[in-house]
Image (cartoon, rainbow, N blue to C red):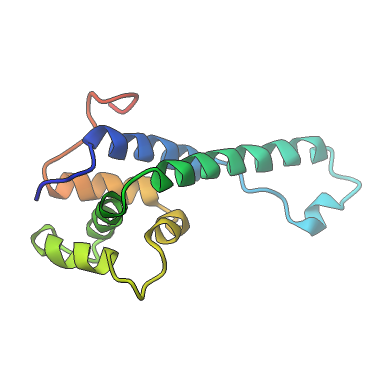
Amino acid sequence: MELTISLETVCRLIIRAREMEAQVPGLTADEEDDPNDADDEFASLDDEANEAVEEEIEALLEELADDQIAEVLALAMVGRGTYDASEWADALEAANDPDAEPAVEQLMEMPMLAGYLEAGLAAFDLSCAGIGQID
């Protein structure tokens, strides 16, 4: 398996996905309306931070070519165990399925995207060690 997307780009996605996963969920409308909540001023800050990281990840993905987005999705599918490393061609085919939800949307909806991508890289003896902020 040889990726057309650079390892550095995948690692940058992992860093941002970790940030997104670490964010505090924004408050619901009911929680925001509670006059007794002293943390109301911080709720909007949390929500803005969440949105900024999500928008950055989505922009990073949308800058990629279609085949590169498919590779990221296929790596995530291998990482979550949907496919084995030996089934890379099948994972790539599924990631390119025109009848499926768009790859960017699938990736943005994955609750543990960073972990899936790391596990997907590990399945091919790749890692982000020494690249960027990942040790």
